[in-house]
Amino acid sequence: MKRRIAILGSTGSIGTQALEVIAAHPDAFETEVLTANSNADLLIQQSIIHKPNAVVIVDERKYSFVKEALSAEPIKVYAGYEAISQLMEMDSIDMVLTAMVGFSGLKPTLAAIKNKKHIALANKETLVVAGDLVTKMAKENNVQLLPVDSEHSAIFQCLLGEQHNPIEKIILTASGGPFRGMKTNDLQKITKNQALKHPNWTMGAKITIDSATLMNKGLEMIEAKWLFDLRPDQIDVIVHPQSIIHSIVQFVDGSMKAQMGLPDMKLPIQIALAHPYRLYSDFPRFDFLKYPSLTFEPADENTFTCLGLARKAMIRGGNMPCILNAANEIAVAAFLKNEVRFLEIGELIEQCMDEINFIAHPTLDDYCLTDAQTREWLIDNLRVKNS
Ligand code: NDP
Ligand code: MG
Image (cartoon, rainbow, N blue to C red; front, top):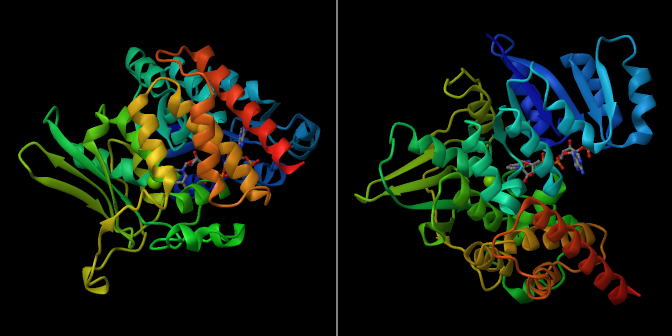
């Protein structure tokens, strides 16, 4: 039986790589749904090649363009953000790959879980914002949350066969990003183009900036807390510039298991989509002799303040990670428009964490409200600052 996949965010970095994985395994997978925010051209092109049953273009102004372009195909075309969640009711979807970016992934992921679809989870922000609700709902609906993020895929693979063997801690590896080794002074004049150049991975713009500030690793700590049911003090971060070891689990007997390979997101995508099976892939193999030295160094939380802020938010819990995430999304978007400096990203997030009302046990409505309030507060502040 082929696994029928819905890709939410098919036009992005993860989405396009997932389509490559699906195309390489026509006996294992079928494309059932594709969605894009506004990139109608690519959505149309993907639909003609991969022949999904239905597509969504979130930007409603592009609906007629997409509909017209696909009129010769037996593909249903929908528009608007809500349509993504509605399509999660389709019986013909077996698995949903959440590859949208940011908070926008939360509602469609919850809709997919409610409809008992297994989740290949790339959209880490969903777990950062509302990890308690998402993991609880997944348990209630007997839905698997299969990590796509390379570090979490590594931990997941290390835990296979371990049943309930107790974990002492996990160590998430970080490449250190393009500014590894720099100090605050060096970061004063970082430009958008410098920050967009990641040494080891090619990714969407938002996560690339998150990798430069180390916020990505902060979000990943929170993602790991929920995926693997860990306490904050069980989650460590270590910088490993070669990105060969993707992460490590240390068990209570002191034994460590690590997962390694060349950095290529298609591998963790394929592992999540095919779980519990491993499929053949022709990705380049890692050769120890070509990498005689794998190195490790501490993460510098004093310089890369976003990592410390994320840890603080994880420990505080409640809606604090939701505030952190919303503030980060706005600050990164402003940085990408050259409206704030690189170092201001952390400063703005910290201000939001101080300003926005803390809620210890938030409901879904509280999370949505917190997200909206944080965005509004920060956008207003940036307007005043830039006027
Ligand atoms: P991209 O920016 O490349 O792609 C995002 C996708 O989501 C696009 O299809 C985009 O559509 C769509 N999208 C954006 N905003 C919205 C919205 N408001 N509503 C609906 N759809 C939207 O991101 P990435 O592929 O890099 O990342 C996707 C997720 O995966 C993120 O959460 C990221 O953290 C995570 N991830 C990514 C990795 C990577 O290597 N890229 C690695 C690990 C995790 P359009 O193209 O039309 O704008
Ligand atoms: Mg990662």
